[in-house]
Length: 395
Image (cartoon, rainbow, N blue to C red; front, side, top):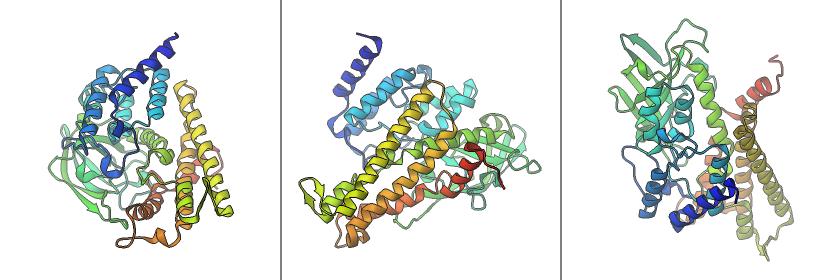
């Protein structure tokens, strides 16, 4: 037996023996396990699955063992992902620390920063949020004005951030601040890591049209942060910020599989509301639309996997993630537009008289709109693709 086959069998056996049956389904929003100081588990199975994965380093399998990972190489990581998908295993925890802060620290952090933060992320001890957008600097991120003034060995931060997802539940933040107001806007920015429990930090939830409040506006009033918490060089944080945006676009490009939703699909909605003829949606026009969606989704999945494989082989093109972020989020919007059209009046549900799934479908439809705004709007994304991926002239 080859090394790869033996490794695959080892992972397969471990997952089959250790992943509880209830953890082999897509998680609903309330079933997700977020890391953090106040970590909560929706069930005993979720706690068991989390603890078993933490013990093996499987929350971050491709991170080095000394930082809490499993130390897998690229091929092993790919096998692990395939076997997780085969059983439909849920991620043991979800955390911006895993997706964005951790990879940035691995790439740009000092050894002290790596040993301070990475094991805590891997063990789910700290929950992270992102301090990027501001009320006056959304898509024009480099226009941020949140200031960090030097005071000895510390920065004193004043300003605010907006659309800070789950800031009111997070323990630490990775945050862009302006440390040189006289420099060109892409310069003079520093990338800081600091504790949300610091004096002067306040997160205020923003209620959305869905009734959810996971976005916040976060205020900083003379918040003191040690200078050693800067990730990368002072005034050169834009380099780190751009890299983190690449991580974010990678994550958001796969909204179809990573988004938490009701689990309903265009096919199931069509069968329910339009009629089911031995597994076929009875309406021919919508049946063709469903087929187009499924072909598009499958093509996107295969292309994304090709991108991942190329990255693992060291030949990946970073420009590809820019394209997938746009395509992935726009396809997700199209998916829900199709679903609500087929559901008709039942897609307008909000309260009494509608089922839980109908209400959730409406929320998913509205939520899909936010994904083409978060991480850079689709319009801005097209500008970035034109300029950086295609090399088109600005004017």
